[in-house]
Image (cartoon, rainbow over all chains, first blue to last red; front, side, top):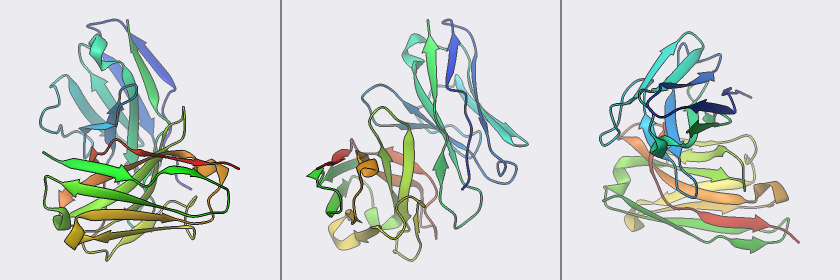
Length: 108
Length: 123
């Protein structure tokens, strides 16, 4: 079955840039989506179709994709950005969608 | 405001069945595909199933295929998940989620999520 691979943790100081990667063989031809999940809360969509930002998501959140890797970038990370982040995609239309294993972002 | 309220969770013995429901409001329910996503305690997210706006396209994760059935009633603005032959590894918080795009043939990606209903499978 298809897998998306994320680093388990990323740590930055407030104001620094955080980059979270997601690796998957089908990412050159399939979009990646990114979700933020704060402790005890439901996930929130922060990036869709590799690089588009839903309304209400701060501009410091951006996404990109190149080859088999998608990247979520948080420019000037803030303490309130501490959360688990998950990428999401599929390897083919009609196949199950999958989440990456999640990355815990620490900002301190 | 989009609202998704899950119900039907609880404690169930292995091998038994449970039916989850999701009541939707704040958007045109029959325009959108819907998803079920689960999260085991202390673990990551797992996509479980998705259904298109007209039930014409349905998909399942390999881990639940043949045991779970997703359905919807557009007249009642409701989404369902029938879970049979439950296993201990199905223990999780089950989220109902709305798809990002209207009027498409397949479920793509969740945007709005409910708060979840907890399913515990244990003897």
